[in-house]
Amino acid sequence: MYRFLLGATLVVGLPLGACGTVEDDRPATLEYVTATILAPACANAQCHSAFHQAKGYAFDSVEHARTTIDVNGLVSAGDPEGSFLLTVMTRPGADNASRMPYDEPLPEPDIALISRWIADGAPGLGAP
Amino acid sequence: MKRLLWLVPLAVVAALGTAAEAYPQFQLSRDQTCTGCHISPAGGNLLNENGLSQAESMSQFGTAPEFFYGKVPSPSWLVLGGDLRGATGYIQTPEHAFVAFPMQAELNAAMTFGKFSLHVTAGARPRTVGGSAATRVWAREHYLMWQQKPGETTGVYVRAGHFMPVFGLRLAEHPVFTRRYGGTPLFADTYAAAVEYVAPKGELHFTGFIEDPLIDPVSHASGAAAYGELRVGEHAALGAEGMYEQTADDKKIRAGITGKLYLPGSDLLLQAELQFVNQLVDKTPTNPAGGAPKGIVSYLLISRMLGNAFLLDLGYGFYDPNLRIANLDRDAFDLNLHWFTTSHLELVLNTRYELIGYDFDGKKGGDAGAYALFQVHYRM
Image (tube, rainbow over all chains, first blue to last red; front, side):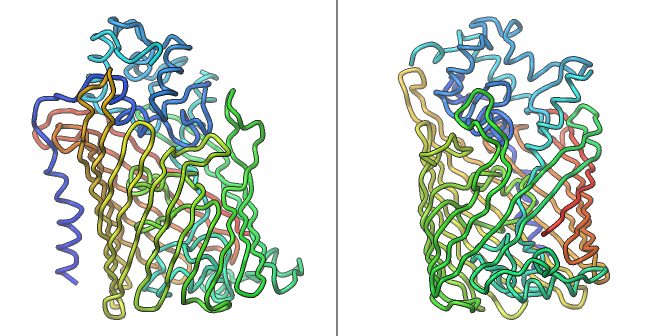
């Protein structure tokens, strides 16, 4: 029993201490941001997947993310503070404005990567 | 304020909506396999005779467990069922709100003709906003199954149609990280073909699947999944899992292990799953470097029956999508209390506290979230 408990604790608990420490060198691109942040965090069954498209937004693929951002003007290239996409991820809850995603807010490094992508001119938007 | 209250439940439904499935918490402690209680080799949905008997015997006020208390007669080749769920409670994500929302309204049917059977699960779905789905109904599952030994709970099963590949622990609560981030998120059912083998000593499941060509799906992946589990002695099991997924944008290779141990003396069931995910983001002219984050998703669940009609779960989940980068990880601490009041009615308290980007050094990677929801589940 105790061996299993120890094993289970190691299997599941070890990751707690396995967080990386290197400088964030992830590509600040639409493709990378969509595949690793927007799709897993935002494209749930009843949020911004093609399945539901809450508010008409879909972030479950690069094509859908590009269209959603372009059509709805969610990003102002070169201006993170002026981009609605970043605003909704960072604003505090208020009477008329809630932060996204509701269920699991993004970690700060992910928000920083999206900000860097926008600051770099948001490459990947427009026609592919 | 009204706008906020309208939007919050939608998001919570995404996080906490569910589809009725088996409780793997009963494996080893009650029956060895999912087919011990369920018609499907994947578990979930319709109960067989033993499953109905279990539902009656382990409820507080045992009532006739059959579909509509046995008052709706059906021929022997037809099994009917259904599930209704709703929830209300408090969430902090990190905003604070009281919410109430529907979760599930589905009907199930299984029609058996010799070794072949047709299975359908149909019901409510969220309607797309400006998308292709104009209705609020869909058949989440519909598949044809061939069973080597009709009426028995072991043997070879071959399925083709629309369903979720068997993979990992298959916990019912889909906010569990190993489901949400582990290859089987809510409503990721898709067209697939599977060859499965179930025996008291173990089970094997091989599934090939494609992106749903008929609707806008939750998952755009095509690929294959494999899961095998071997019983070790009477009260333990070890499993291995692997999945390959390919979309237009990336590929994911998942590999992991599972373990289950039932401790009869203390009536504790421990289940654990650890999965490594290697994601390969495609290289494109505007993303020349591609990207290859390697992550971990895991879950540990400790369950115990309290008396005859209560089930207590304590869970811990860990998810880190990129082990190289600090403060991307999530830690979830779950406590669920199930009360099986009658053969058909289950009341559940689901609670979670989640840390986002937690760092022992005190650096802050994000906010904490929490919820406490009271769930009502009525099985028809």
